[in-house]
Length: 246
Image 1 (cartoon, rainbow, N blue to C red):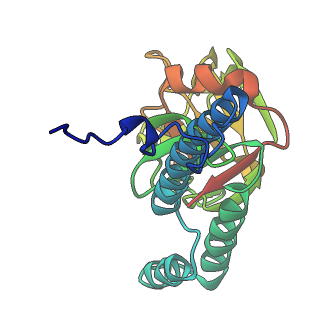
Image 2: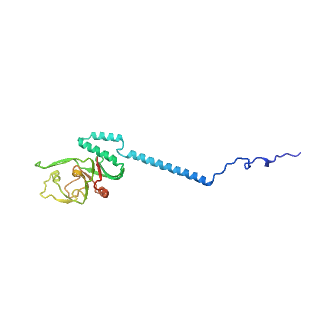
């Protein structure tokens, strides 16, 4: 008896014409999608790094928020300052905050941390240690003349700068050291320091005096920084450069 076998050629196959097919996307479309995906990943990483940096800058920038301003006022209120001195220091700190957003070179002097910082906008380009001259009242023995030195605070503009200049030793230097004033006071190169930044009212930022100078350390009420730090920032300093001392 013959065995009946179905004709398998009649069965539906995947390649039969009645099977629904989807067109294969062209190569250029695949490449475009791949490039867009890679670009999205790269932009995502860039954005994340930028946000991280900006958040870090916000955390490390000084005196930019109302809370910090209030804290600054509280700290200043605890200091033994006259109303005029308090206003000068507060105004100086406010102007310093504004300079953080600028694109200018300027100096800040932190007398609490004993630091000199040379800025370009919010970036600190150079930082160094300083010494702050103490307040002093110096008088002639006969009371005919006196000198009052109060530590300088506030916002200033550079009046000028001199290097390797000759300094005629003032009378107050000898009085401060309790030494007799010579009949002819000497003029000494580097007597106040090799680099001297001149500020209003006779205040200065100066490098250490020479060993031959009778002045030991900073001028009363002024600021003394290292010769290396002042030499490094010297070319960028000019008249009208802002200086903030607080």
